[in-house]
Length: 370
Image (cartoon, rainbow, N blue to C red; front, side):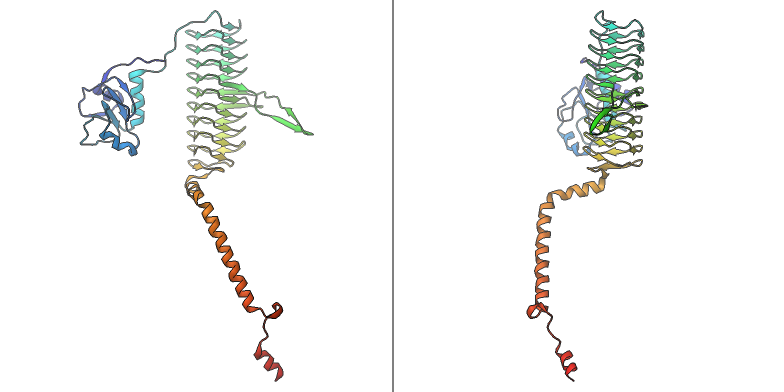
């Protein structure tokens, strides 16, 4: 991990992110920190207004904000998107993770028919099977297994103990974190006379360019076709994506999401932690699904849903807001039921004569006598 820093003035940072300085532009910035933990020489950011009062007490050297705020003693860097600008500053000051240049380790096992691109760094105990093609500038950490016929694009990084099964297609600039499994068999069984018979999984996994796969994920190969992770999508740790599922470009799947086979997600979807999606449904573009939601039906474009089963987020908020009051509401309903039963009994009892029969009508009797 790269821990070195590049010292910059606030003026230089403003030029880098396209912002404007309110305060001393010669303020020296050496590192970055959170709003509450920053000290002199640190830059931080404000993206959520509920933390705005911390601007009065922060010890930061400068704060990235989305609008001018007169009267503050701390220098401000005003930008359109504070969170993105802070990301740019982090890269400027610290850079991304740097990978040690090791070349191709003699302790790696590489098949004679495998093709390895230029400037690759393959660590100890990596296994590369027959007919594998690895692009230029890839980094493959210890104990990775790459199965027969797999293709890896340029500039891809595969962390320790990951498995890329046979036939998988991994694009360029992909990051696959430790212990992830790409192309394992899908969970497919045909049950006959009470016995579960394994269905051969003869499809593949396709991971497009600029995708990041978190630690200990499992991306299952298609039963017949492809399981696809679209360009630029980011998949958190411990996510399982079933056989034949398709995740559209630039989607975000937070940790512990589970997507069943043949489900389809559009582009720019966001799934919170522990979301479960049943198979064979379609989720549209720009859909947001709250954490722990259970999605059992297709969702049109642009919707935000939550809950289990997942429903419109506004309805879900109202429904979940009632949960603490359900025991009290149950008691009140029972009380009302008891009162209604007593009223009904009183009315029925007052109208009934001996033996439960209705009292005779005197006027009717007198008319009969007449």
